Length: 407
Length: 156
Image (cartoon, rainbow over the protein chains, first blue to last red):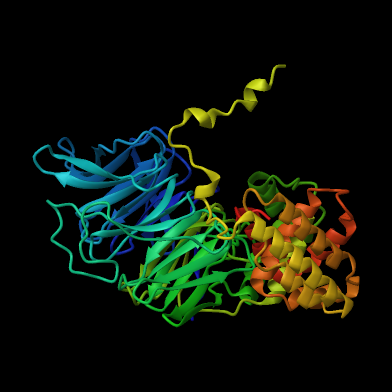
């Protein structure tokens, strides 16, 4: 059981983060039109490259581990595939963008490479999902649109391990499983629990959470035989199509917005409650078993601000410095604050100080993920040990709600 | 300033408009039957209350609640029945009652509390009673319960 690694990459929202194959580099978007690539040096991340091509806010980034390509989507309705190529003048390798013809008229909201990395799916606000594959004759990425029966913005997609099926969830309050079969790319998929004949745009399943609500995040289990999704009604739903079993887990906390499976019988989800929750179960039932954010540990680290994380100001942890920093980053009337205790009023007892928006597997093969990484609105990137589970204490919840009435 | 343009129904020009009815499953019962059920429940609740069985009465009134269009009368009757229960419960009993409700019933109760707060002075709805219940219910069911009351399109 090791403590989480905490890195502060900026003071703004990390819209999305994605690591390369050996986890030595991470691509993030700091709520801007650019992708920043950071390289790890010991315990620190240093910015190495900036990928600028989008002209609106970047919404999602995905780094394909094997083919080492990055795909980005943005509110400018475009997606780019970035590939490392040697610069003809200097010979240095640079990231070169290729435009993808998405044919959508609203923002692209989420992007994800398929397991074989020969296609990717772009979710969008245009009530459609673009399935993109490479056309060697035209030397560009072409897309086919999944449209029916999507009624609103799609927030997230996830690929089935067979490279054909795609799960999607969005603002029409449904999570669906589609076939994204493309003739020139895919071999005919073998029959699975989701169906046998799978031409493009076949609907293999449609589910909603118990009290409705937007579907923020979807995920296939490592085998692909189960589907989990998180809804804005503060619930997680797990679906087993083979036995028609559907489990709704209603939370007492704020909604979860992102989830990832760590094994066939466990998943981690996080969101507006600023901590990653662990759920466990199987075809017989599912339940919340704990959180990765040890509440006892954080009380001490939380008080010292960035919690021993290698921040650029390292030793400058004086109370005067803290009050100025709070005035800058949180808008607190810091310089006038009489003591440190006062300025801690808005400090949450969690590692993340604001909503977690992305969670990804960090270490381990699919089905045996040992560490996960999270990033969120507070500009922190945290790597958690997926086995370090602490029980969710009722006391900490009540304490937090007491704090909420103060604000 | 002329603000009438804000009231123009722009959706009528959209061929592919998303209707409310597509966002939740409609009640399979027909409106007359829903009203009938609500009336029967009101009677049953009165007899439960006379026996002092508050949890039983609440569970009854919070199951198969009327929702959706065309059942306004049943909705009002059910709210009236519920308010009777809420008003007749002693403040000290509320935490115990709330804790013994099922999670679904807790969520539905939260929906009614918010509906009641939106109708001040309607019937014998009293703001202080509703706020008292709301406080205790939130302590037990958390913020998740409030979020569900907001997201659920099956409006009571």
